[in-house]
Image (cartoon, rainbow, N blue to C red; front, side, top):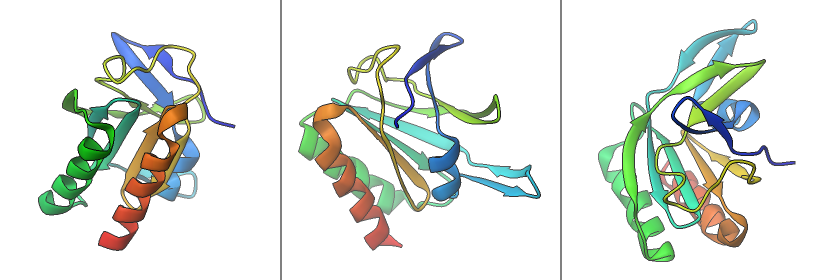
Length: 139
């Protein structure tokens, strides 16, 4: 089941422990965190693209962002964000989430692909799957 968007500090966040591990945005050794990615969040209507800026080339990032913008006919905000230890896992801060149509309490399915997370609203599942496919093809 998808986690819910929550308020964290002055903005919104999402618990992403399992997807972050699958995407290798976090890495652990013997239950100790060895790496948390430097991330950037791209906000589109009903879609948030969380990318590891150290492991994705600028060209690939542009391809992903362009595809998402064309599919959603939108782009709201692009901002660096933080991936934090929260509870027994990790949460990602989501600048631009409100502009993209996400609210506290919304269920937010999170699709992992190598070095990215795609967070989609109910009507954007196809676009999320497309973003994950594009990223897998880039690797």
